[in-house]
Image (cartoon, rainbow, N blue to C red; front, side, top):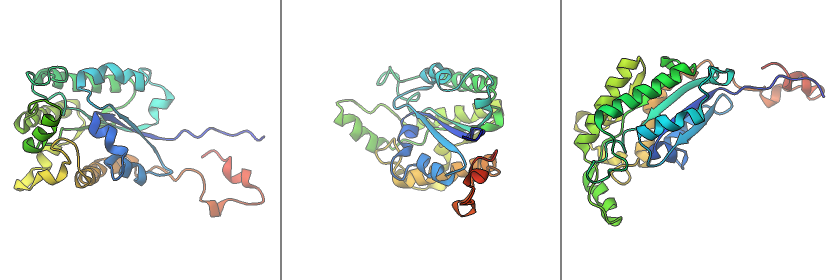
Length: 243
């Protein structure tokens, strides 16, 4: 068999909690981003339902090598999307709750690790928690025998801390908490249960994120030739080229 060069597919890594984990479901924002990058880039879902930023910083080195490796150089972007669980009320959800100041420091520590691994600040996109619709989420809590454990105003404090941390790190941020409530719009249409995203919310996140992500992946080529351009008499000449 002819010698060939392995294809190193570029990667976009989605790192977050359940809102990221569920993003590959039908009409999910992660699935929409992956669809836009077909044949150009792998979109890797590293969403962890229920996780907070404290746990995230612990497990991140298990996903991305701490060494500035060739594989890391191929990372085109990393989204960091935590806060929906960190902002849970301490007295109602002590296992998930993370104090505001620690949340901010955890985000910056995640950023420092990514930087040390060769993922530069311009490749990191922070995403704030979305707003909470308390009446809808309270119903979900009650179904599980628990009281309301999140407040929209508290989620807003964590969103603001995320925006500030991103600024200090020199990275972009997608402030969902603010954007979804901009100009007094009905943000509840973006949520399926008061916390997680509805189909419209997923579409909104995909659209807003693509606005930040597109410039980072715009120059990525279509990997391997279009089928009509493959020489049927000598396919190796097309398919084993150093692309």
